[in-house]
Amino acid sequence: MSYKINLNYLQATMKITTFNSISPLRMTCFLLISAFLIQCSSITGLLFPVKNDVGLGAQMDAQIRANPKEYPILNDVKAKQYVQSMVNQLLQSPAVKYRGTFPYTVEIIKDDKTINAFCTPGGYIYVYTGLIKMLENDASLAGVLGHEIAHAELRHSANRMVKAYGAQMALEIALGQNSSKTVEVAANMFTGLALLKNSRDDESSADEYSFKYMQSTSWYPGAISYFFEKVKGNGGNAIEGLLSSHPLPQDRLDDMNKRIKDAKLAPPTEQNLSSRSYADFKRRLP
Ligand SMILES: [Zn+2]
Image: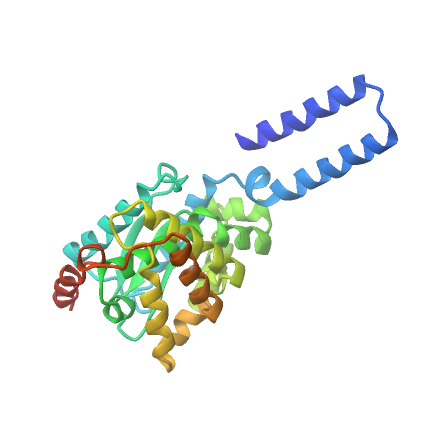
């Protein structure tokens, strides 16, 4: 859909300009702007429409489910519902664009040694018990989930996959038409989630959007900073997995503290952190 609209727009612009007499300067400007438009939209808009992110995510989700040794999904309906309801509350934010396009499902991976969460293109979210058990309130986990939603909304890993494989092949993978490449993508995923590895800029944007989503909820919007503090104070091997897909430079913590200050937030309370309900949730986990 957006492919057609964009092409029509370019054609329309061209038609208008051919009927007018234009100076060389205006022509240069037109060409520069056209080149800019084509470059900007080449990955996300024109060549790989956003609805195909769901196909990419579904393929990755299938590979994850087919590999319980690497990704032991927790079979606990209540625990899953608890986390899914947090995701659903975040999705109510007007800043979330693709709530009707992406499925935004969540699964818990039973692995206490891994402190991580990740999200495929199209919004298939996974969170490890290691991360859940490290946190101490609902609001901190919601902040992390908001961060994962933002990666999908901003199409970070979809962009990386389109860059790595080209739009045509990414489309074939999304449509399930290229099983050998899909296996390759899975292999890439299983060796350290390289395709899901986010850049520093991606991390900053995801934190910024998570804060926005949190502001639409009843949780304390700055609670992800508790998670940052935990990670900082926790050194050691367990956090390597986390740092590989979510690098945590000091700037992320500083930026979040600045957002909290700029938004003039009142200090958090038990009501907007919700640590008692979270403790019950953790106690029920295996
Ligand atoms: Zn991230």
